[in-house]
Amino acid sequence: MSAPPLPEIFGNYSLGDFVEVVSPAGISWLPQTAGWLWLAAFALAYGLHRGWRWLRHWYRNRYRREATAALAGLAEEGTSIAQINRLLKLTALAVFPREQVASLSGDDWVNFLNKHCPAAPFSPQQGQWLALGSYRELQLDSAATTGLLQASASWVNLHESPLND
Image (cartoon, rainbow, N blue to C red):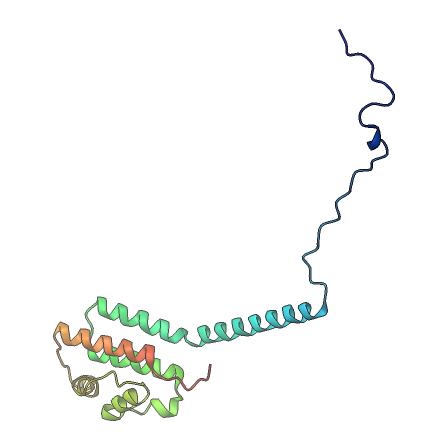
């Protein structure tokens, strides 16, 4: 059985000429005025500038990361004051002029180290060990060696660099 045929005019006669409403096109998220484009260009330039400065700072401070890793390696193995002194001298030569650092020894060397750090990391006793350790074979106990390594790591990470970042 099938449904009976529908008449020519079927349903509500008042809606016979009704046309469905069409939705407008979606709104674009792209900026419509030049001010937003200028702001985006400025933000991009500022971001690139800050990224460049951070990358330059990171690259210039690679000697600090290498010296910190070397100090950690010295802490794992038995170390001498001469090795710590050598590492501090190499670190200082990486950033300060050779004429200023290469000739320093003894108390002048320790004064240089303490002067170029905001808070002097080396105590007078540690300074005496650094000043004399390269010339005499001083035997330090493990606590004194650990303290000297910590003061050296503090100097490596906190010394003021003449390179302006």
